[in-house]
Image (tube, rainbow, N blue to C red; front, side, top):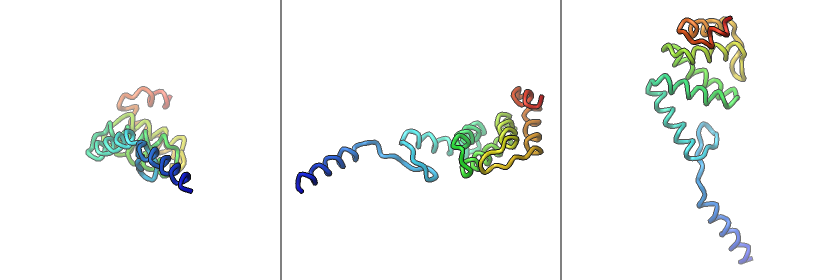
Length: 128
């Protein structure tokens, strides 16, 4: 019994020395990535439209309804300030739909047109 306890303590001590993960929005992330998310979120909340776009892209990449709604929120913030990549991303998001995001051709055309008017070539291509 003492030997088993010694093995368990040894294994526990080894695990305790490993990098301790953190959580963001209920998801598990390593420390470095957590810090990156926090820094990006801080910049986005401060009004940095490029950070808002980057944050939206990170949320969108998770492919869940909850995270897609967050992506939509941040894309909208940047798009309303004239960020053409966010306008294009919203247009594509609404055109294709995604978990938590309904397809909406009217919104899609609105945002793709704004991006195209801003000179974003991918939006021009998408509009034909």
